[in-house]
Every structure is written in structure tokens, then in C-alpha cells.
Image (cartoon, rainbow, N blue to C red; front, top):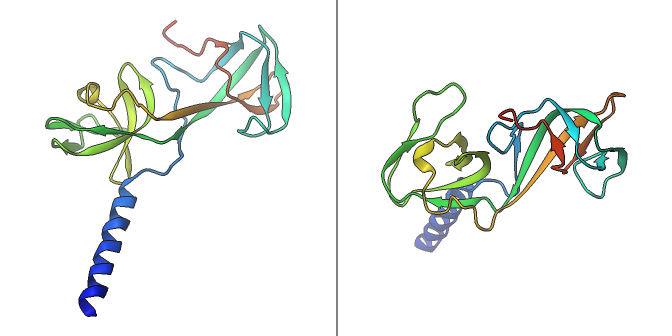
Length: 180
């Protein structure tokens, strides 16, 4: 009986450790602007755009932006469903956090990380053992970086010229790309 209880405890502990290594699903990456040179600043609507009270298409529409109307894009959140596993296929040092100039992690073939949000030009945020890191160029060609099976929703918080705040999923804006 003691052996059975021990086996159940070991199996349960292994499942708990494995579950803790997976990122939350969905995962919310706050403040991310998900393409190269993406920047939150004054944007101009390219079309008529609904702005919602909450981050939901079913939430009340507070106002509509019209083509040519300017808003302040304040922040955003990329919501990732089914973060994509990336399989490390060769030894590589990677894993950057704010302020780190050198990679913080050493991966070996067989390690798995989970893509959370693109950052542009092959860079992305990823989850590894309970922490979020920014990728370096070394991970750009690893198996899984295409993100198959992931679903991304990018919500932007905007403020119109009368000061009303709201949320939109629309990508119909000019001036979001600081590179031109």
C-alpha cells in the first residue's frame, strides 16, 4: 500500500511540475507592440473603427473613430491562445530580459520553449520554466517559430481627442510604424 501511495504522489508531482512549465493559456503580453518598429503614440484611423468599453467585441461600443481621426494609442495587449512550442534543435545561448545585454539561458537540443508574442524581424517573447524572455536572433530558425496553432489577438487602448478611453482590435491605423 505504501508503494502505491508513493507512486501516486510521484506521478502527481511530475504532472504538477510539467503543468507549471507551460504558460497560462491564454497568455496576455501587456505593452507589446507586435511588429518591428511598432510604437504607441498618436495614430490616425484609416477607416471607421469601433472603440469598445472593454477588450471584447461584445462589450459596449463607446464611440467610433472615422477615417482621418487622430487618437493617442496608449498601450496594448497581445492575447495568445495556444502558445506555440519551439523545439530547440542545437545548443544555443539565448533569453534576454529588460536590461540584460547577454543571454541568460543555455539551451540544449530537446529543450522546449513556448512562443507568446511576435516582436518583429524574427524576434519574439517566449516562456521558459515559468519566466518570460525576449528571443535573440539565434532562435529565429528553430522548429516551431512559425507559430502553427497559435491564435493572437492584439487589443489597443486608445484615447480620442475628447479624452475618452477605449479598446479596439482594428489594425486600420497610420503612424503605428516608427520606421515609416
